[in-house]
Length: 100
Image (cartoon, rainbow, N blue to C red; front, side, top):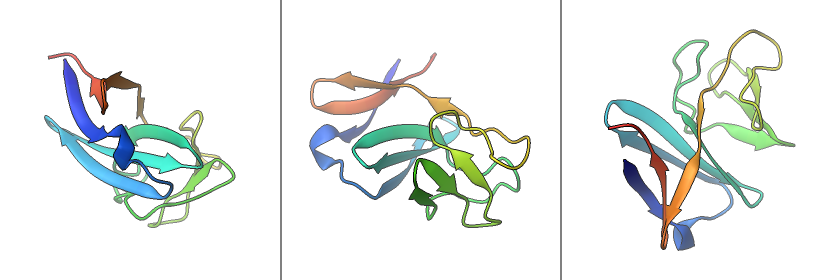
């Protein structure tokens, strides 16, 4: 089932948009022309990633400073993994397809 998140013309570099789809808490990020959708909370200590910083393709958790690869979601210093979700488009809308 397609869930609308944001109109594509509302994307801008630096976007950190928390969204809820059913029970899932997700974070929509747009940085350096790339858009990603991932779990909203750090898998290490459940800290919200809304105020994360991103540099050179790496996301830094504002809670404890753990670094994650934006491409793979893997933590660069420990065995944690950020779950990522594929984005879909429906006309002017950016969203995510999830099972009903």
